[in-house]
Structure formats: C-alpha cells, structure tokens
Length: 127
Image (tube, rainbow, N blue to C red; front, side, top):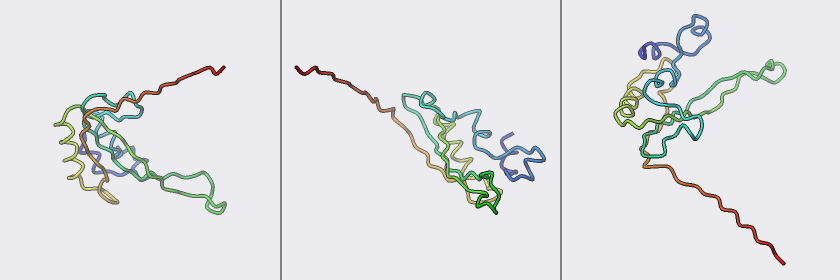
C-alpha cells in the first residue's frame, strides 16, 4: 500500500477523489512511531528521522481583507529501535520521486540515549 502514496499529492483535486495523501505518517506508520510527546521517545538507544514539511493553510480571511493562504514550516519526529527499519525508511525517502515540489527534506541520526534532566529545589529559612 505504500506505493500508492508516492503517486498522489495532497492537492484539493486528489482529496476530493479520496486518493490517499503522501503524508509521511501514513507510509511510516507500520514500522516507525511518530513522537508527538516525550513519552513516545525511547529512553535507550534508538534511531530518528526528522522530516521538515511545509504545510499550507488558509487563515479564514478573504484576500480582500488581507488574508489568504500561508505556509508554515513544521517538523515530524519519527523514532524506531530497529536499525533495519530506519535504514529502509531513509532509502525510501531518498528514492521516492516527489509528485510536486522538492524531494523530502529530512535528517536522520542515531541516539545513544536521552539526557536525564533533574530539577532540585532548595528552601532555607532565614532568621
């Protein structure tokens, strides 16, 4: 099913026909997990892909009123503990021909583990 996604786009004409969109989450869902909150990130060694995407939105105002479409930069953070899954996804991203725009922009790296952050509070009473 993954091949279907690279042959379509997220333009309104495709959405109206209920074609699948090429969003990374739909293709990567089986093997990698999108880290949407800190608890989604493994604490031990793991592999990461951060994909940078441009998301177009309409602000709800007409262009006559100074509104219209705008593009916002976003990052999608994907993790896996399986190196072969990570390497296969990198290969897919590099070899997938985009239907429009630039090739996917992403960085991929291995993480040895998460930093442990502690906060200490000290209270003293002055006389």
